[in-house]
Amino acid sequence: MKLKTILIAAAILGGAYYAYTLFGKTKKTKVIKDRSFEIEIEEPETEE
Amino acid sequence: MGIYKTLRIKVPDIKTPFKSGNIDYSKPAVKAANAEVIRSINNTYGAAIKRWGTVFEIPDAVIIGFIATESGGKMLGANVYKATGLMQVTPNALWECVKKWDSTVKTALPAQATAELKRVLPEILTSSAAAPSAAVSNKIIKLLQNDANFNIMSGTLILRWLIERFSTVQTGGQLNKAMVAYNAGAYIRALNVSSSQPITNPIDSTSLATNRLVPAESRGYLYKMLGKDGFLSLIYIDKVV
Image 1 (cartoon, rainbow over the protein chains, first blue to last red):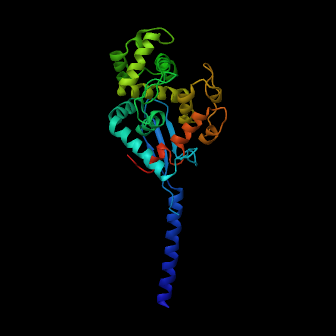
Image 2 (image 1 turned 90 degrees about the vertical axis):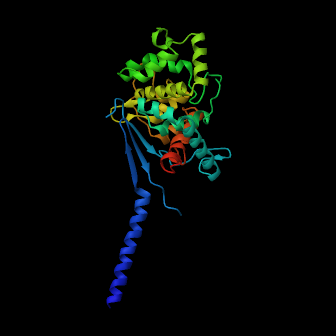
Image 3 (image 1 turned 120 degrees about the vertical axis):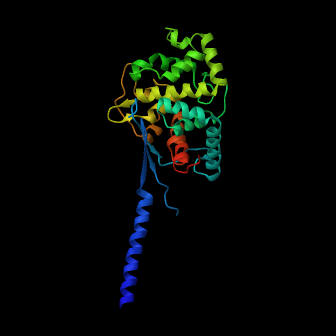
């Protein structure tokens, strides 16, 4: 019973982390700011 | 805070790569060749690029991208339009931008640029002519072809002037319009501008790059710089330098 609970929790956490990395890699941008410019850079897409 | 209009750039700003015939900027061999061009430009002219990029508040990567697109990093001789050297600068464009700098940019030409012009081309500061004479034009071409520092200063000066010209309070500087103007001329109809009409209509890069009123070469220019796997992507995303 205890092992089953741990496995389910691990699966949920793993799935959440996988979704987070996917979301992060496709949506995340970085912004460089300097005196007279702002550059919004897309982070590299996930490899397919 | 800088002294110029804020330039906002997205990298990439166009979701598709430059394609023409067999050339596809997303093909690994083409990407590798373009990366090598960028590295070579940075290694050879990096100091001048950094110097004038700092003076005119233009990202080094944009100047490298312009050089890569305009000349592939070669000190080319004047073409039929008198476009010369690394940044393919024309004598008339440099002359016009210096003459109209104060009225367009609303601030004095940077002291470093004034000093450089005074040293190698004092005529441009003292003459009241609207365009250079034939003799001065030839002198400018020689400078542009043989003096990389002068060429990069001139190209960056023109680019900043165009960014100031093609800016609005809402959008700040518009690199895409400045690029088309740099390549095709500041007064082409596609940019909806005359010598007395201010720019009021910002446009996204994809729309500009697919607008048939924009010359084909200039449309390609937008893809090469701002497109997927274009020069700015290679520098900022793939970090080739």
